[in-house]
Length: 154
Image (cartoon, helix red, strand yellow):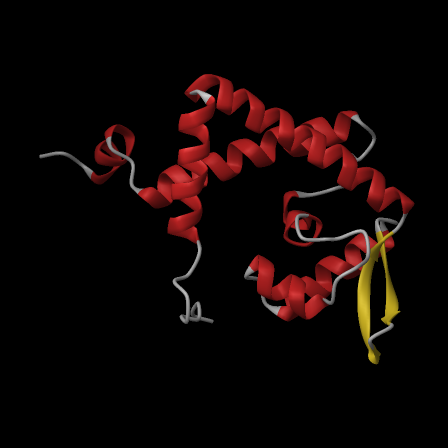
């Protein structure tokens, strides 16, 4: 009889494969960022940094995009603000709301992260072939985006 561990090793399911890909990208991204002077970042900060825009974004939108609870995003924003990567500013479209905006250090990190991820993707595209890689990303997106009209569970 094949054990669960053996089955996962020889025929990993989608969750295991997705996790392996995520962890490999995180390891390379954050290790490379650390060599470029961003050694104070943790993997968990990616839930905010991955969705941050130069013009700023509301914390509620960061929560929606990342799939993290608002309280978790609030904690991460606090941490990143203390580290000097971002700041909260009034939202010009609604003075009651705040935008989470990158500082100069945050913008530098965003540029560095984009270049690192572009390099990772280029390497994977070279390994699989550009056409296969585009198809892989398209299919992966199909599997990870909720069908139109459905709401992901809380």
